[in-house]
Amino acid sequence: MVSRLAPGVNHLTLPVDAKNPLTAFFCARQIAQLNRRQRVQTLHAHSRVPAWIAYWAARMAKISFVVTAHGVFSNRKAWIYHPYRKADKVICVSSAVKRTMEPLFGNNTTVILNGMPETDFVWKGPAGGITRFLFIGRLTSLKGIQDIMEILPFLQGGWTLDVVGDGPLFSTLLARIKELGLNERVFLHGFRDDTDRWLAECSCLLFPSYTEGMPLTLARAVQMGVPVLASSIPSVIEMAETEEGLLPPGEKDLWRRAIQRVMEGNISFPCFSSEKIPTIKKMTDEVEAVYAEVCTEGEKK
Image 1: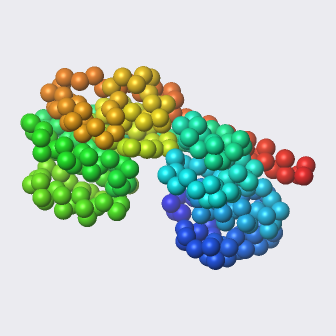
Image 2 (image 1 turned 90 degrees about the vertical axis):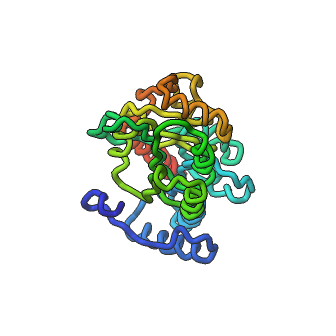
């Protein structure tokens, strides 16, 4: 992503992903020193360990800090979210995240939906007659891809499944594909940066997640007009015009029947509203407004 930064943007590499208190405190000192030299006015962290780093660095440098919560966290230990409660503002990427996590974060939360860049791609479907299903996402159990894999042997008719993404389940899924004899139908492609092309050429996107903050893959599919089968989880419901057609995550028999109906051309896909997906400009304007607010409040202290 560094290559995509605008000219004049400085990028500093620190081990902010290391889950080690001493390493985190070292990062905080480095950032605090940088803040003093460059007169930074606010810090913005985007996950739990960086939130602690931003909290410590902001206290050292006596400046404000903001945290973005990108998902619903499974770990509910209250002490982990201390930086969120101390942040000048917590940005939640959906109302679902705010509603679920606010008891742990406190009342300093606001919702700013992730903006999506424009795309030149529109959905056109596959060139051949076979049904091409598509999954895009990190290969973890929370994304539900393991459920889809168990459904596939029971489908009737011609189909393929392209799995685009990487993650801890990659080797497990690869082994399961061999066990089920699906080598010529299911293809693991690993990480790809041309996901819009995959969306444009599929028959249907499968989105079986158990939890999401603000599902960007689904948002892109909605932008492009891609047919989708998706889980009935809060953040997806938030994007939909109605809950009709959404499927309970983990209910494999319901998913199997819905996927079979896609191949038979006998299904009404859930309806999503592209108007609910903000532009990058709208998102950045709202984030900039948060920066202005916390910096102004900081000057008054």
